[in-house]
Image 1 (cartoon, rainbow, N blue to C red):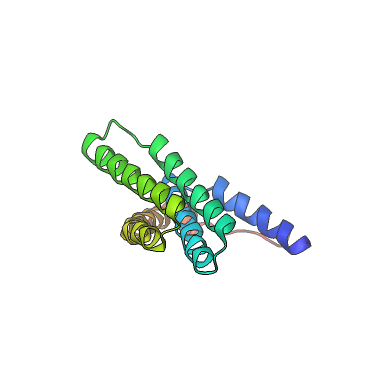
Image 2: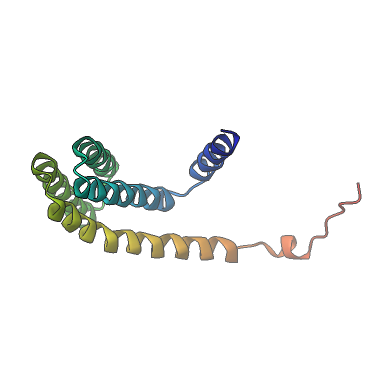
Length: 144
């Protein structure tokens, strides 16, 4: 139990300190995780498991839709349409327990997730390159 508690604390700290891009990446990773579990549940005829995991993925997509910056018209409009399409595919997949529809949504999310990963990595590199000269030359007395 202690390990799980420590992991939850670590995850909370990771999320609290994350950039907006990294949070989107976390959400897309979560969506993929739940959809893959839903596919396995469908394979195992676990109707409740499939349903619950598809709903979790839908909820994440709704969250992504609600946080789009609509001031950036073209990108936001296209993402809204894409997320909306994915949600409708998942609704249909959930009604029919059609694994192929879930897999089709996974195929749409994976390149989007990879693109966000690149953005986050570029953000991270940019952040680490902006170290003031005074920090590079500073010495720290750890002797107390």
